[in-house]
Length: 98
Image (cartoon, rainbow, N blue to C red; front, side):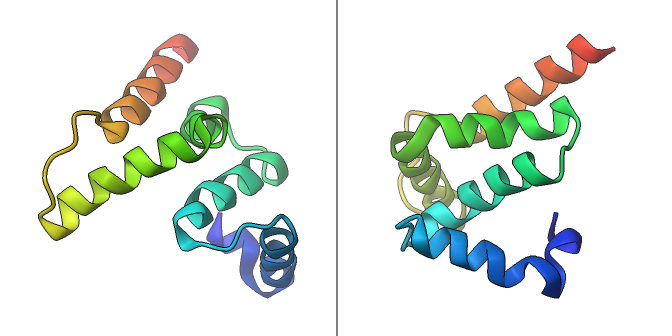
């Protein structure tokens, strides 16, 4: 998706994030994925994770951030694995396509 953003889309994406009242970075990867899903039209199996992140909203993003803190900063392991949920959805979508 980043290849598509380049100079042509960067300001548009930043504008949409700003005027959509999204002010923190923890929402950025989810909002960028949602934007890419709407505008780049990726395959179902490649977009299923972005769709789940978008639909999960703040509760899912917060759980994801907890897991990232565990993986990268040594924070305690959360009970929920968002990575696991996203990977399972991807694998299910991929198997359904085959």
